[in-house]
Length: 247
Image (spheres, one colour):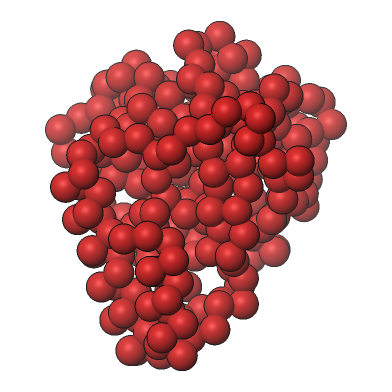
């Protein structure tokens, strides 16, 4: 299902999306959104678990790649890391794994990287093309050894969004092992800046922008989404957005 079709469904319900701060409160809108989510996920699975999002050339890169959501986490611990150039930042891989990992940014930089130029589609209605680079998430999962009971990858972020709940996101193992799902360390040839999620952000290219969690600190393999936030699978999902935001 295309992004245009998904937006048309929302518009047809009478729901107005005021950027990422919108909350779906109309039961009819929730039902329509859930229907669109299910159809989109089925379509992507029919197309193929390894089907790629479109990639572009360097000439297509947008002159400005908008930063939205949190652009500078207010948490003192994050600010201290930023001031130190993220020298002591760690990404933990834990949960239903055989070998928990604690990786520095230098460790991630040393891993084989995938480079991809893709389009970021935001639920707010804007898009931009950028060049991302970083290790495939699947490399970390393979190194950690995912246990059979695991069903989800939950990403916990160093961002208490707008001073509220901790930002988090989740994807299933199919998307986690997708070749274009990476932990991005660079944007357009430069290390990520704070506004774009430094030092590490998720890129899950077949889903909308709110799934691309910034400021990633922990990667948790879990059998269910219970116990994370309100249990819906992400900060915005807890507030009414679709869990599967495929495009």
